[in-house]
Image (tube, rainbow over all chains, first blue to last red; front, side, top):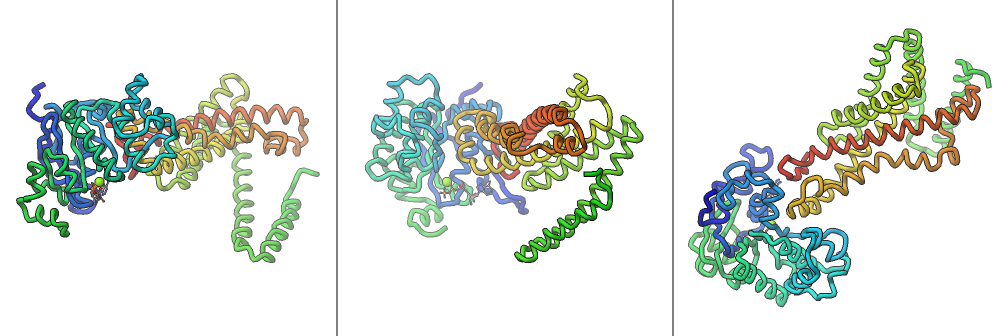
Length: 243
Length: 253
Ligand SMILES: Nc1ncnc2c1ncn2[C@@H]1O[C@H](COP(=O)(O)OP(=O)(O)OP(=O)(O)O)[C@@H](O)[C@H]1O
Ligand SMILES: [Mg+2]
């Protein structure tokens, strides 16, 4: 198996839905390569297909055309369950199973030591006492962080994060951003993150990808793309104008 | 009471007249249904009575099989009509009813609990198929609505690398249980709250109550077996329609 320079290689990736003629492409001929151990932010207007794109990467949905290669092999050659363990996915609206915080983490990764669990809880900025709390008492932001801790517990090679800070206040947002940066730099995990916030993309750095109507419009250095978009759609998006 | 004849049936029609009068006084919007239903029920039952008598007289195993086949198909059709939102539910219901009924009947025949006699097979199969029909409709309905309502929970489990079976385990168990609940409740209250139909029928027909009870116990066990098997088969066939073989949930089914 030839390991190329990229961990994920998207080639003309397309997903069409509905039975209209022509069926609507919610991800449209998307080609891009994600490198090892780097941070990528996907930005674009609501309904652009950002979540749909992430779901194709871990094969929660099937593409109708094109391919995704993970470490040089088509993702269809992997057992889906194994693939999804290696490509962790944090949902835009995370779901926790109806028990305690600890149960949720252990359910994803059995045999996790007590100290590892505490460390995860600490990493996502939650108070240590929360491990035995039933999840239905948690706030939305706390739930999102438990889901993130659960994802990190499985030690994925790629973390697909769908707006991980959407429900957090500025202090927590910054802490999670630091955590994401450290996951990338200290653990070598590739992070592909959807974000609605241009400021966040600038703060995090790395690469940014602008997606509109299912298509990749432009990509490049995060700061450069946000400050100096090179396409009319990019300028409209960065100025907050409708597409 | 004498064995009922046409006179008694017509006199029993007085009860329908009373019921319609009550409904009319209360302006319940069911009068048409009541009148039509009473006539329809009469016609259906009389027709069945003659059909069953015909089967008894001929005593041909092929005719018994044909009758069973028709009963199961009609049962599956009625059950799938109650779960229209799930594609292919007729096939599922038919397979579930068929498996539950045949295994149960075959067991009873093999162990000589009953003999291959139209007089036993037809009424017992009628009870089995009726109960299996309800069980399969309940199971499919419950499973489909649970899967649709818990999409995020299931996909979260899938995204964590669980198999489709693990990700939906809670829902198949709940659904299978739904198909068996009526039977389990029946076993709890049988004899205390209600006297079941088979037993009532035998007692009315002049049988010894203890004999009638023994038959009822057999009937209860038979229905427990049939509804359990039907429920499990209905779950197994329905759940597969909601997942691809790549462990993806497809909720539009
Ligand atoms: N299975 C599906 N069938 C039909 N349409 C779909 C399906 N899945 C997604 N869509 C549509 O595809 C488009 C892209 O959806 P997606 O959730 O990927 O957008 P998004 O970029 O993540 O938006 P947001 O920023 O609001 O989360 C939307 O218009 C959505 O309605
Ligand atoms: Mg989204």
